[in-house]
Length: 195
Image (cartoon, rainbow, N blue to C red; front, side):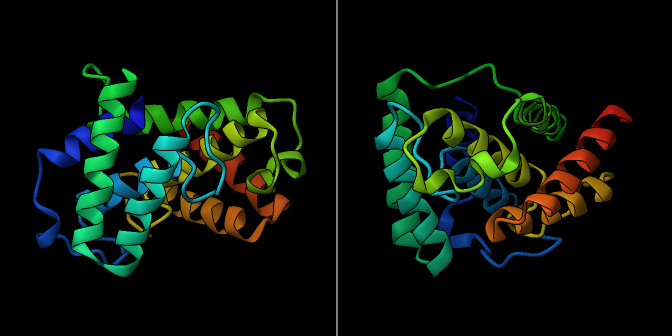
């Protein structure tokens, strides 16, 4: 539902034709939001959420558009996600998608991942498995990295240490490095607790 809230916010912002889809500390807000949404929906991990293959497919389309800087494909992905979110009843009008809200949600995701009794090795390859619980954990980890800017090397204002840790988390996830993932999750969790 949070991914759907991000998509709804993107749709009220600048048109994709005006986006700069280059990653970096000053990445466009729409790019950060879109990257976070597709991360939450499994397009980055390759792990569809149980019962939401349509959202996964649309997120993959949007991710492809972002990777290729193809505004037509970005539009298609956003349209598909918007329609699917509405049809599935996952629109979340009360979600706090402000910077503070994103930070709270990302911290909650990291807490949930760390609180799970599965070892990182059990879910890091979740995209290649059929275990829905492992898919969810992987998407929570990728989603937290996305919300904190890690997927596009963006710096969350006033929380640079969190953004740096999110980038380390994203790198560890994409390289399937359990020790790096554990370290980044611990750092993010500690920083979240100290806010």
